[in-house]
Length: 190
Image 1 (cartoon, helix red, strand yellow):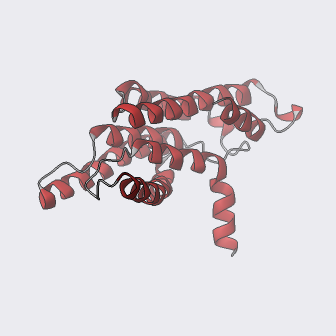
Image 2 (cartoon, rainbow, N blue to C red; image 1 turned 180 degrees about the horizontal axis):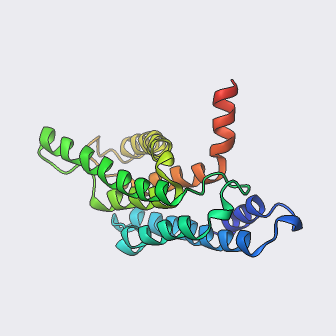
């Protein structure tokens, strides 16, 4: 967490000229966001639950942050959403995974993922905006599949094992927060 906090500080405040109350507030808020992602990932790995305090209760905080700190948009971190994008992100994050869960249940007649993952994607949408949802789900799904298949084969339990998805969604959010600008410019310039 200390390393993530330091990296975030260097990204938001690369030199003394960028050291302002607004950039410091942004660093503090997004450090808290990263702390929630790290904590909920560790809890999900250990107990396979995502506490509401780190997901659904954090959604209003992410939306309020988007409205409270509009001066920070484009300030060395291009992922600070507008207030509208944060609201749409929260709603779209929740409804998209609820829809996937519903379709899975209709096809398989069993639960495919927990409600904690649904609330977590809503929280990620609130803090990073609706534009972040597809990259986060893509990054989370690809890394989750690779690591999940490896763990299932290594443990010899087969493909019916449960692998917590929260840490992979969190990883997607962290990658988006730190590297999306670089990834986007590389993909569209290549």
